[in-house]
Length: 363
Image (cartoon, rainbow, N blue to C red):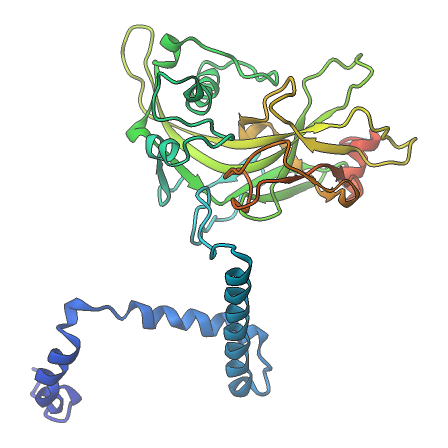
């Protein structure tokens, strides 16, 4: 039997309860979460502190961070640049992925922490050239993002082989595809496993909110074409999954099926630029524009990704506003221009070099 203990602090503090409630309110009107989460700040700073004088180093790090925030705020205020806010395509917060099975081609989360209502997303970004979003289905501008997404999903549901061009379906065929709750779910990280030239398993990690977002896929071109190149290149804009419901030919609805897909912005190779091992020049890329024969944006099955690539900015060619207006397709949505050209760094690692030199896997 537990006996009454008058030596506890709670009993001695009872006289202060009334004044405390008057000043701070009842305990259900505030949370200790903010104070508890502040422990993460100290843990994040500790690796940067001097281990033999951490008590003095930690306050110095705090003062440095405070000064840096003040400097950034002052620069933003004088430049007219708005304060930082989360990008609409980012899945904010940590997204922990467990160990990736090396036998899998790719691995990404299937969580539902970051839902996105499709209709609200299109309406919010109405007129964005990357989406051509319009809330009215009677407008021609609407006939881009949403129908093309349905085309991509339906082609995969039907088992159509990817040939580089999205199959165009009729409106009746598109109406056989439904998205559960009309929602997409955003994710931060995509991991892709691949076999290197020396028969080892390696892995690339993609994050659409960082510079680790350029990828390569196998080109669907005629090998006899004089301009043939074995790879296509794209920039990852967002990582999604969706729960798809397909209406069968007999009218019944199939159970919801989880499908991952990538929203990408295509690069095009500059055919006027002589580049090869013989020319001793890196391949030169530029973003596809609306005036080109191919679509600037598209959707991609993660299973088609070969691996990541390293692109180098071609500073000598500068920037251009001719490719795309202000859009969420850029990491900085306040910018209205792009770098005109990039170089493909085929010397980023040995495996990438062998793929370009023709050695291949198991050479």
